Image 1 (spheres, rainbow, N blue to C red):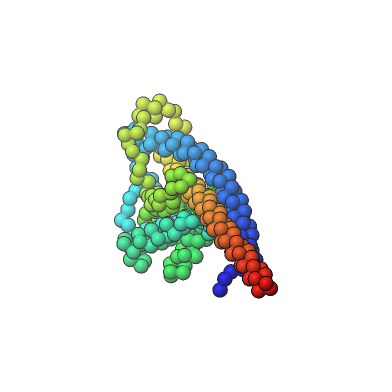
Image 2: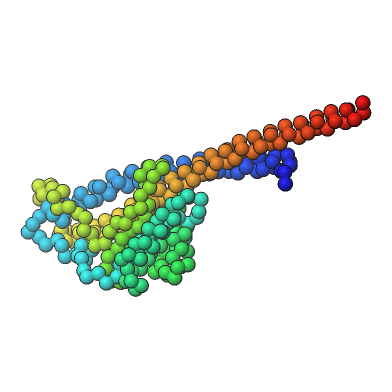
Length: 292
């Protein structure tokens, strides 16, 4: 059945409206991405300073035992915890599918039914796991696009407390790392126990010249949990940056596709209109010939 000219015009108008919406959403996501990238950049400066100080404190003095802290000790792994970071909504392309598919593959390859737990940040992930019979032990929804540490303090502090109470024996954060506006990479990073502080990076002379009011161990008792919290927070910022980039790219793709559909419909409309004009001319000529 041939499509009428009015139907084609209505489709063109509807698609134009859609393209205007997706274009506006693209610009909003681009603005959010710029702010997220700035926040991630600022956090990296802070994180590098804290890591340097912690490394110096841990490895800058051989005569004092500083490896006693439970956040530094590896223990036999009976249960593993994963913080899985997803978005709370769709319209972000393959952002959620990438992380959730990788998580299911990881679980299938390395775990039995009862030797892991999920901590979910983002409603899409929580709903995904529940639909597959995996109940998150803790979850956080409705996180802002540029979350402050206060917004995530509760779930981060609770996670570290659960580790210290030996509810699980190692903690990984699983998220999409932001590479650029078009690319992200799925990462699984160990957060607890803290094992990635390189002794070769310690500046022993720097630490020996410091005057410490409390003992080195007392300082580490305060600094190590803060360091673990900051690393988890950094992963959340990174994931939010990747989410905003994915949203911008998805809306740009939708806008481009809408423009292509409009062009195709415009060609179809012009051809149908030309055919209608030709048909009318043919009918007029045939009518005139019949009167002769």
